[in-house]
Length: 128
Image (cartoon, rainbow, N blue to C red; front, side):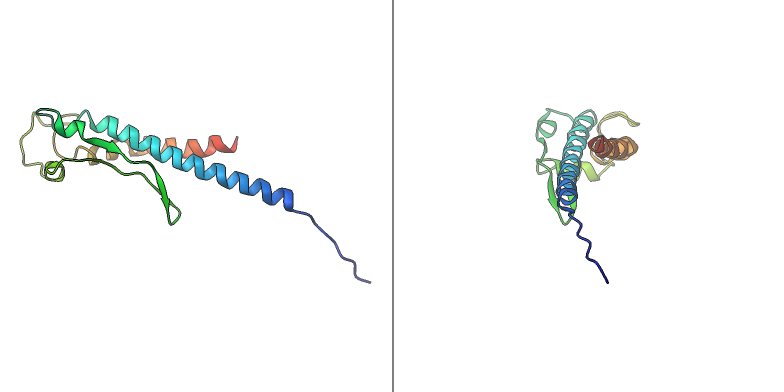
């Protein structure tokens, strides 16, 4: 004679949904924090004549799209992309930490390991 076994996993499912929500919040918050830090760091190297380009920097709120968290960081002047992409323009002295081209890309590359570590730690802390 076969018997039926009933298993109520509703509490488990509820806790998994809460955990998933916390993970999403941690990822979104970490992405936003990294965007804010990237903007802060780029402020040290963005070309600065009168400060208009530097003052136009912004970090948009993080949003989720197709399972990825996106934070848009950028500068809002018509010449921003041209200055970013053309290192042949002469700004000041050359070398790390000086103002010039790649003022978003370089801080991102130079701090990528730290950003990745922060992102992972944010998710790990959520699990504690």
